Image (cartoon, rainbow, N blue to C red; front, top):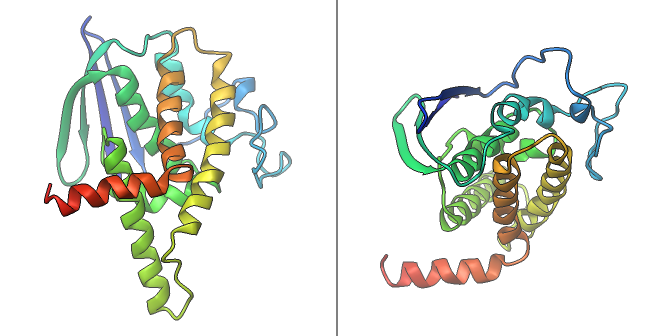
Length: 221
């Protein structure tokens, strides 16, 4: 996987990020908010003696640093290029960052967020809530199909998907607390909250979200 994000601001500033399937190299020294024990997730399986720094915090650090003073709703032109195609959109910085931060967190090496890594391989920038639900459910059901083919018990009721997103919410909340103290602007914070709300839509209102998708599919559009 090789995804490039290019942000172009109205004042001429340009910021670029590259995301691969492997976590970025750690560049020392790291700020205190990236240490594992700083606002450590309640469901984190890592130990400080084995992993002194939070993998997700380390991965998103360059993004948080680059945009820590920026306002969420300013307009930005963003192009996203992978091995197959290029996506481009004029949008708010918040929406673009939600897309980038979600991808970087999934590929960070965090053992909880790593559950999203296989979805990240087919990354869809600027996904709406409906698209997120569709992709999450479709991906999970495909995993269950493969489990059945390999003589394992499939979960057609999606209970495992709900539980997975509950685990992800705990991580999102802790990451928001981590960066809250270092962001002068609100772009990173709003982007994480937006990402958090998408995960919540799977955990707390999956049935209603599925009914919405069902009605659209029955209507042919």
